[in-house]
Image (tube, rainbow, N blue to C red; front, top):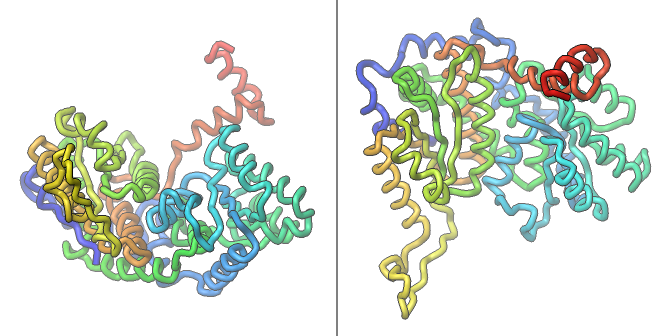
Length: 442
């Protein structure tokens, strides 16, 4: 079971860091409502209360896609893709699409507006059988809506309108919105973005589960791990790892730490860290408050960001995710010449060496003034990753309430959208567009 070691962080704190009464109130709001944004806490009980019939349809759709497609294009932005990509890369590989396998390649589009990136995936799938999973609560978010136009048109050119409709899966609102209306009119199979689950908390809904299942990952195990952690998080004391993590990171923030680095010594964790950054950044970054969430990929970033972490401004705290060793291990070979002087490592597994790198880095950073917390996540498999996802979500909800903000809204995200609409002459934004172009000197 996942655990949190805060021993190398609490030494930076004085007095009571556990924030017990505040945590009890935050936990009560998460479990029973009454806090800010409590109409979006459906994810709290999701690992037990999820729609079993829809779950079965997700598994069935995934098998169909595996049988009739060489590629799946997943169209979504933010929480509509980061969690799924994080799980697929963490459990499959960052090189998932390059590996020999029986499951389709999975391409993530609609998370930007790059012509080059869009054309690249367009060219990769145009000559193979492919399907599309378009994910949007409204269907009008610019980036995914634009991408969907391209790939919907390509499907219809390739298969005809009727057959294309059988290859489009829409994950959207259960009853309203532009995408839901289009899906009903065209006959796309639909899955639901629950009303009470915000995008960044939605990886364990159809939003994340369909692409994850297409990639051959056991979503029953993923949900099982989340359910295990959900039970652990119901405990209202410091045997609950989410309480420990939320309390210490907030106490460090109050003591002057402003940036949290999430680190892992597995390159496959990169997009899980991207998911974590959205989760904490959107949940806490408001009212001029909140730790800035950043990530580093060790040991690679020890040769780039390591200098700053060790000796830069002392406003950092670090959280390190550690996994147990994989079943298959590479062993360092012996070299007769020993020109690099590394024969002392011969016969050791890379995990053994990586562990020493972790421990050496931990000591150096703590002695350099960076508090460290270790999240021990167990084996890198679907069940443990499901537990890790729920742990971070629950701790995020607690942290937001400890901070005094609504952890479930994102009002600041709308500012850039309004400016973009105005600059693109969206109807109704003409006056605003003129003012913005004047500011830009255009």
